[in-house]
Each structure stands twice: as structure tokens, then as C-alpha cells.
Image 1 (cartoon, rainbow, N blue to C red):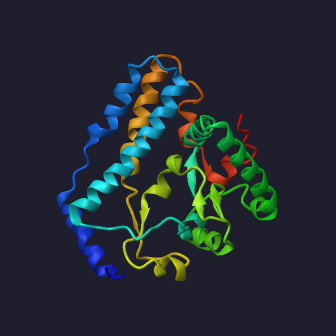
Image 2: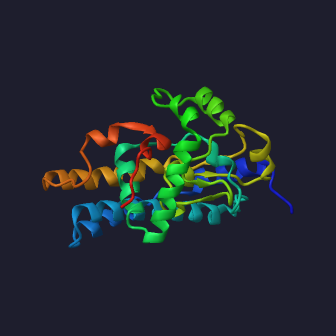
Length: 242
């Protein structure tokens, strides 16, 4: 198979900078529509989280089609699932609530996986109880540990909650040979669409401001939950799917 080289990817990213314009209304339409439904507050929050994540994924597809970029990331490729993933408490609560909506069999399997994960990696995880700065040095040392994401099924190399995987997971992409991920702890050739986080979080924050004025923010303690950040593996510790 013939892959693009790194310079080709850089050139296409430059084309994107010149051509692509974020359509903010795609993000805010989601919360406008949900605000007017008869769902409970918690149901609205979980739906907003899931739908906004999908908007992010759709936007990446639009950009890729605009400049003819083809991801080389494939099912069974999980090199990026060993990076530290940081989310805020609001996102953690919404992820847990979304998982509680999974079918019973899937919830049972996921709970069994969590229980096994925290038992297997107990010693390594104890060193990560308090993390103040997730800088490049921390990312490098973390990745060297080869500590898998709490959501990763290491036997099949697949995410057990793929459709609700958080922003860092869905905005990290490789467009050249997969060997760069296989052979490097922190490959410089990968691309991150992390700028989409601003629109995603901006829409969620506006929705929560609206709910706050309505005096019902459901499962979220607003605005505190937006400012409390931690590793995903710490947020999922002790989770009980019911």
C-alpha cells in the first residue's frame, strides 16, 4: 500500500487552514434543539454530549474530504490508546451516564472489564492519583509505561465505548504509514484537530448556562465540574454501572 509522506500531510493541512471555516451553528443547533424537548435534564445533557461529539467527528470527515486526506488508523490499531487522556468532571459524569444507557449485556461486560483493569494495574495506577501537569514530559513517561486506556480491550485492541470516546481520542489522527505510531513513543507525524474542542466545549457551556438560569443543571455541578480535570483512568475508578 502506498502512503502519503509527512510533507504531503503538512501541505494538505496548510490547504485546510486556507479553505476550512468552522460552522459554529452546527454545534449550537444541537443544544437549541435539545433545550426544547421534553427530556429530563440529565437526558438532555447526555444527548448533548453524544451529539456534539458526533458533530466533531463529522467535521473532521468534512475537512478530510476537502483536501483528500485518508486516515491510516484502522480497527485493531491501538497505539494511541496508551496516551494519558484528560477530561473534566462534567465529561466524566456524562460518559458514565451514557454507559448506563448501554444494553444490560454490554454494561455487564464493561463492568467486568473495569473491575479486572483496576485490579491488574493497581500498582501503576497508584502512582497517578494526583497529576498536576500533563506536559510533553509527562506524556512521554506515561506512554513508556504502556498502561492501556481503561476503555481498551487489549485482547481485541478495540475501544469498549467507542461511540462516546472523548475529544482527545477522536481528534488524534494519522495519515501516513502506521509504522510511525508503532515505532515511536510520541510520533511527530500525527495530526490533532484539538481546535474543535473550543466549539464543542463552548456549546456545552452555553447549554449549562441556560440550565443554570433555569435552576436545574441535573447531574452537573456548574460551573465547578468544568474546571476539575483529571485522567480518564482516575475518573472511571470505582464506577458502578447499574
